[in-house]
Image (cartoon, rainbow, N blue to C red; front, side, top):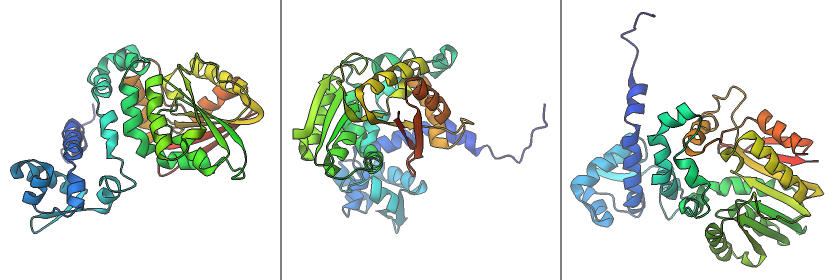
Length: 338
């Protein structure tokens, strides 16, 4: 055994042990709209407390905590938003993403981590995995409503990589459409695009609402049901497979991509969005850590490297596969064709 070094700082261990505390504080701050009320000009503890409908004695330590982590600035006892919080945590911002709390910290997601030891022993979750595959589970409705703001940058990146004339007719299949933002973004940039959205019936109501709000509902066509079971149709120019494959084992992914291949025109393309770690599987951090999330959340899912995805896609009939990282997000786009 190596001789212990008394000068090694144990802070990283302490941060892991107490990480749940800041997560809980963040959920509370979002529920009370703390950052939005401060951004609106309520800067003193009393004014913030009144706006949040909370006790001043409760607001002070909560606001102090987020000053410590860099979301707030504090001067003479008053609080203001940092640029980070103003951009992403004030509900009035078009880049507001804090709604993700509703899904990421939902009971369905937390259960898998509360029983992570069993998932590690079994090689997959027997807790959250059932909910993730249940067509009647409200989990995916929560996901569709809460996570859409986080997906906007990736949706814009996908649309930009279609690289076609703006007036070109496009027949687009959106697999597990959820909130619908991927297909909707394409529809907004391509006036002649027709979007066919596949998902559970209860989830498609969210996509429909978003399409109506964004003015493209007349070009959104619904295909309710399991993506593994419904008939897609044929002659699609683009098939979107976004944040879907990581829920399943490689064999299932390969078989599914074969189905996607059959739905495309000969010159069509599949556009797959995934968390793709490097071959070492420990970098970059966001992509690498996603594998643990899948262990806790699914029976057999994973974060696949590009070479792993490429092998699946080639076996499914896609001879050309291009890997496009999409920083600053941890998402990666793979464009596949014959």
